[in-house]
Length: 299
Image 1 (cartoon, rainbow, N blue to C red):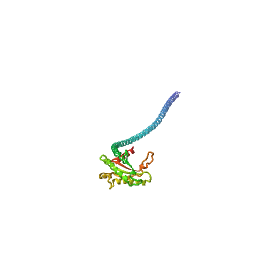
Image 2 (tube, one colour):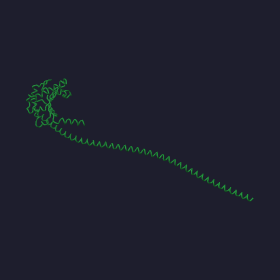
Image 3 (cartoon, helix red, strand yellow):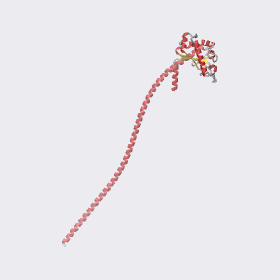
Image 4 (cartoon, one colour):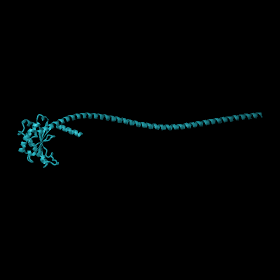
């Protein structure tokens, strides 16, 4: 009986110990399970945070790429602006060079204009003196001549020299020229004005009746007839010295009806248009006239 009780007690002991160990094992399993669950939750939370960080990094990377693109575009714009500034600088340099050249040219032109203005003033002064001298020479004369108060051109009626539509000098015309020419030459070839005279023109003019060619031939023949009588080999109107001087200066031409004279009503004055004119040109006058025309065109 004793042995059995002892065996039962021993069996009970081991059963209790086994239950205790099973309880401990269950406790450890629960602890481990809880720990693993907590670790899994932490892991999932960390994983979620990591995914959020990755997404944030992706967003930041996209923003960074966008900013880099903006910076790149700004850099390109800056380079383009620098190139434009460099090109503008070159243009400004070229413009400054051109402006400097133009300024130098302007100074030269001003100097030339000043010189030409002085020549023009001199020419105007000489012409004015010549006009006054010619007017004074013929103001008390019986010769029917008119002196243009601006140009000094002397005009006389063609009827004094020629019959209508004729080119042969009349005796009255020869007498007229014999009296007129010496007085005209004495003024123009005087020591005071000779060096200023470059040319003397004898021009024949007609009225507007008839054709241009007929009147051109008539006006040329009349101008030539006057020149031949005054300066021909048989002419004795002028002394030899003056004759040779005039031959170097005189030219004769016909103008047909290209320069008619008009009356107060604007109609062609047929009688006044039939005329012969003596004109003179001064040295440097053509050059000054050309210069004025050039400057007028530039203006």
